[in-house]
Length: 232
Image (cartoon, rainbow, N blue to C red; front, side, top):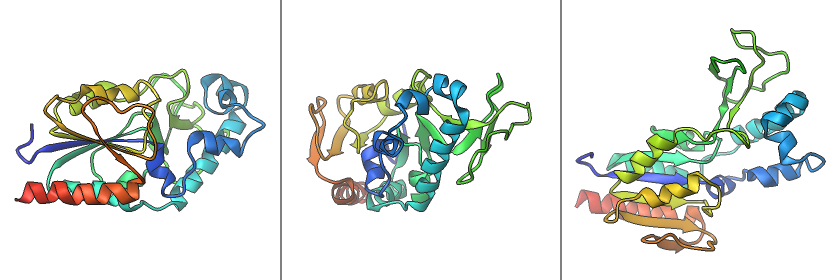
C-alpha cells in the first residue's frame, strides 16, 4: 500500500453525462430503429458491421467534442496527494484528458480499434472513424475496442484488487445496476472511507456515505477536503 494513501474512483455514465455525453441507452435512442442487440453485440456486428461502425463513429466524434468537467478535473487533482486508480465503466477518454494517469476501462475504449482475429491487435485511433474494409496487420476487419453485450468485462481482477487495497473509495455517476462492475463496491476494506455521489440511488451499499447531487457540485469539495487531510 502506498505511503501517500490510495484512492480508487469507480465512475459511471452519469459523470460523462455532465459533460454533455448521452448514456449508451440515450445515445441508442438516436438510432431507435435499431435494438441494442443490433448496435452492441457480436451478433449485430456479424449481421450489419456497417451499422455498428456508424453508431460508434458517431459516439466517438461526440466524445471528442465533449470536455472534461469539474468532477473529472477534481479526480485528476487527487494525484497531487494520493496514489489514485480510476476504474471506469465509461468508454470515453475524459478522465485521461482531465489529467488522470492510471485509468482502467472495464467496458473498453472508444479511442482504440482492434482486429477481429485471434491476436486482437489493438490500435490507438483517438477520434478517427473506423471504416468498413479497414483492416489490421493480420488482415481482419477493425472494430471498436468496446465490450459488447455477451462479451467479458475487462480488468476486473485488477480492479477488484485495487478496491480491496484502497484507503478511500469514491463511487461517482453510477446507479450500481450494471454487473459485474457494480459488485466492485463490495471489495472495499471495512476500514476504508467510502463515498458515493449520485443523483439518485435505489439502495446505498453498506458503509458508503451518500452524497446526493451532481458530480460537478459534490466531487470538487470532497477532493479538496481529502487533499487538505492528507496535507495536514
